[in-house]
Length: 62
Image (cartoon, rainbow, N blue to C red; front, top):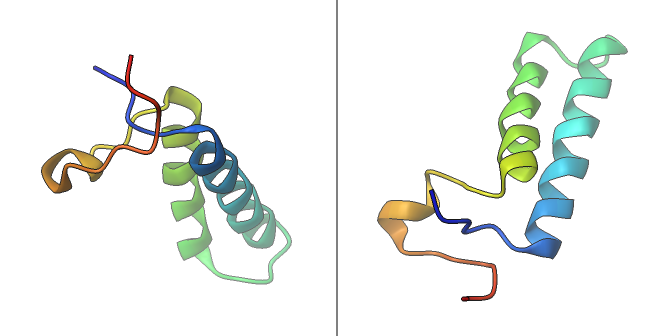
């Protein structure tokens, strides 16, 4: 599994994921806020399966 998520992309994914989860835990939004786990996980591993078929890569090539 080659990384395809770069630095700024990873930071934004982590922030969005944490905000969604935080809003869900705070009762501001419903259960759909748990979808924040997905961007948080892709930020943690540095790989996004949705980028694969689209040929997107936001990180530097080795």
